[in-house]
Length: 159
Figure: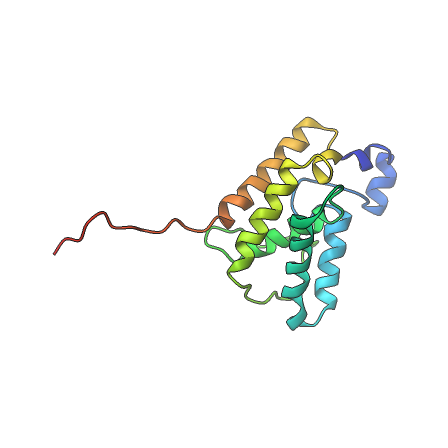
């Protein structure tokens, strides 16, 4: 449970589905709203929206105001990578995403590194230590998928 949810009575939370309801990249109102924005955008604009939120998160000083959106954006990029999980939640985008540029992998990884290490953003929202651990494990899993494959360097040529 996040700090925002701790103040919402359980019945109200269930009725309106407010705040953060689980530890996945789309399991909060802010990320779900971001996916609605992506769905409403023209297909050619979706990559720019994702690049923008990731860049602002990497470059931010102080409170990470778009941390939840950056996590969702990173999950969308990771879904297109080898080993990435498909986006199969009703809170993810309904519209198809474009094939993302390769450079977004590194940008998404940088944004996730910032979010995981920064106490001024989504990491500070968790009041339940077990929820925080699962959330952090999900982000680390995304980072593993986003990491560029290590180049295969032959030690010697056999002819």
